Image (cartoon, rainbow, N blue to C red; front, side, top):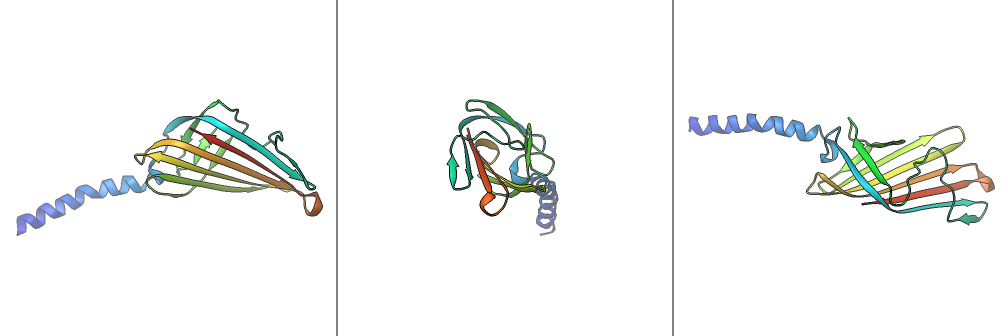
Amino acid sequence: MKNLLLKTITLCALMIPLARSEAATPGGLKPGTSFKLTVTTRSSTKIAQFETDTHARIPSGIPNFKKGQQVKFTVGSNGQLKADTMSIPIIRANSVTNIYLSKRKTNSSTTISTGLLNKRRKIIPETLNLSFTKSSGSGFQTEVQTVSYALK
């Protein structure tokens, strides 16, 4: 009986570092991990004063990826998704999906950035949907622009 108890305690002691390392990798991707995905679709829509422009230019402060462009992403120290001009914190994850969200306010605008990363076998990034919504002004002068990307 003592032998079985000793083996059980030893096994538990060996598993503690594994549990700690899993907790230290939000979303299952280790900090510093890099991966590349290709932009398959891109859209930019602007609504201002009751008019809609479905081919609006991409505003400053929002990444301007081109269709067909290969984009390199890196996982930050806290699990955030980083690329050239963006960094979006991770807010939730499970074995197949990581969800990223940030809200940035300036004196003249608010930008909400979201990302949905689908993974294969818990750790292999497969697809990514990014959306950036920037709003400015107020009342009838409000402008809202949404830029969306699908990457694979």
